[in-house]
Length: 186
Image (cartoon, rainbow, N blue to C red):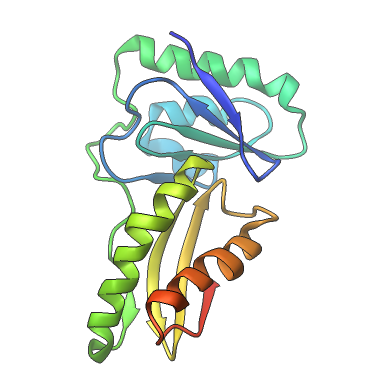
């Protein structure tokens, strides 16, 4: 098994590509070792000293570190990923569709058409680009011309995430949806 690694715009996060499906649908973001119980792979990764967060996408895993050097962490991370996939065991301990649900969304019912267009643009134009960088972004709400988005994986805490939101996503949404005035992380 050959696992590729890619740098992300976030220097504290590396993207690992195992060459197979990690999660068949959805994404999952583990922000601490305490949250890792739902996944044997996440538990193995958090056992590596320096691992601060783990994110699963369709065909990739991103690992965020503390101030530990990648040179010391990378072999152990690669070993944990390889061991998990070679064992044939599922990545998640329980069947799950991922955590990117519409639960917790907020918007006025009168804005439903606008929200549908915003969500479609995010799904078709923004999420694929963000996934290439090892992250994910999901719609959380729309109120008073402001779109609220949740950034996860490599995007969470990335120094360039503010620029991505304001110059990339905000400009895209404003172009197609005149009701959008601003985009903010949640």
